[in-house]
Image (cartoon, rainbow, N blue to C red; front, side, top):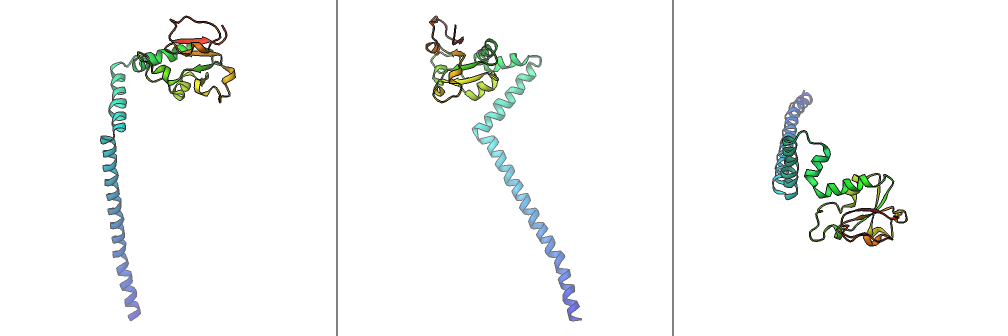
Length: 180
């Protein structure tokens, strides 16, 4: 009989320990959830990059979309990027899809008085101009397309020296073929 009594005690004590484990598990998860929420709130409210993404980029874009719902994609991009978008659109419209474009350095875009602000990033420009290929001046020695360049992008007057023929010095922004 003493043996049965021990089994009964063990069986009775098992449910109590199970509820303790469940309570601890629940407490840990609730605590973790609270910490995660505090961390997310801190990151989104205090970190300047996330603040910019949320308040300026997302909310700003939504505001413009609500104010101008009938604008075309090109009109929206022109509003957002201004001269940068106009220049990239010009490059896209005036070069064939198989063009290999010698693209100016960041310094050319950063000259004093330049109307351009963001289009020196090769990856960004490559996505916009695809399927055209870009070769930066700094890549002339290493790019596999360096010998296939068909056009030269002119920015703030820079790039004209890469052409084999003379150009007007008043020509400040555009794109010219390598061969006239």
